[in-house]
Amino acid sequence: MGEFHAFKAGGREFVYLVPSAGVFGLDETASAILSVVREHPADRAQILSTLSPHYPVRDVADTIDELWRVRVLR
Image (cartoon, rainbow, N blue to C red; front, side, top):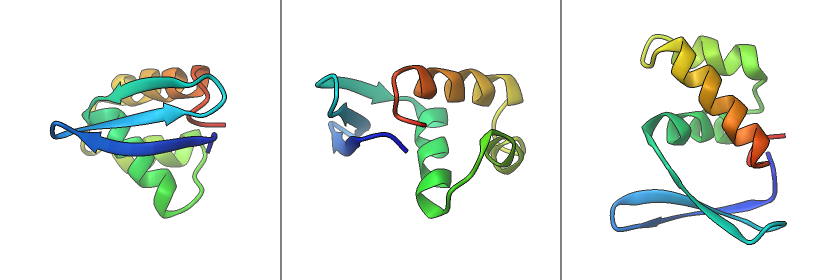
């Protein structure tokens, strides 16, 4: 995982990205992805496999790409 700090405000989950000082609100899919990788290191295929019963695969894949792009995931 990248260098960030997760926090909740107003009932939503956010991440503060240390390198860029950016703050991003997480949707349900992004929160689920972070929950998976917090429990144990997982690659893209493992995340997709774990979450595909609960979320559309395309949504999970797109969200992984976005989290990678903003460096929440590495």
